[in-house]
Length: 327
Ligand code: ES4
Ligand code: ZN
Image 1 (spheres, protein in one colour):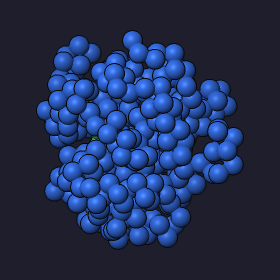
Image 2 (image 1 turned 180 degrees about the horizontal axis):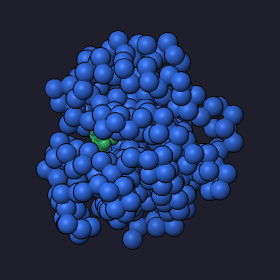
Image 3 (image 1 turned 90 degrees about the horizontal axis):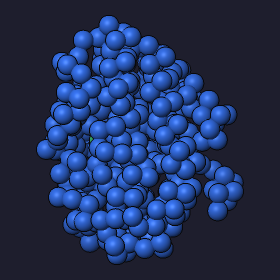
């Protein structure tokens, strides 16, 4: 194993983690039993065996099925607490956590139930684990802009429980332009803006996320290297790319970790960093991503590791005083 102590022990921030993607098969079955939900899988092994993805959509179908066991405030707390304990064990000292309210409100779970459970875990993690955590509300891009506006409306009484909004789910065919008006409203509300772009979608979707949504970071963005003018723009503006190595391999964006372009992104001067995306589905949490990436790519050095950790703090939405304290 290469640089194991450095990779595991260095403090880092995680900026691209879907909390519903941290739901482990064991917890899915425990919550199914607790809530009387019947799953189309016999047991944990059968569920895990279904985690053989060919693309983003084949993953999302199973990810939304897994989330169907989440009904009560306690369920959302248990899920987020389990993630935050794993994050703390990986020396993640700050996490900006995505949640997908529409996945739950569409099943009749009140927005309030979701946000209260997650918020409770966030506060307890600060007190008991020393992890600062914030929430980012993601709109599902396969749904309409009207539905995104309705979700924003439901979220407004809880405005101070989340720091920003994002855009996730099925990318191709659902460009950022579809959500231009709802993101304009979010900016008026003072929310931070991020968007998934350039995971499976073309570099033009990254340009739309920047120009039309005024996205402050790009989630994934690995396809930016196909457009040299875009790379120059991302570098000059220091727009961060929240890269997820194991995710990209599991969803067949790259054949294997030896083919991943994160080293090229760093060498192009981009503010890229490592994240776990959906760790329960993609084979590991933050440190697993670091360790497997560095084992696969001997050209990555301690200097790259340090740069990735530094970039994670630079790209975070914490205030300047907190950033200085972490330097
Ligand atoms: C996601 Cl990897 C990925 N891409 C887009 N949307 C998502 N939601 C959860 N994981
Ligand atoms: Zn993601």
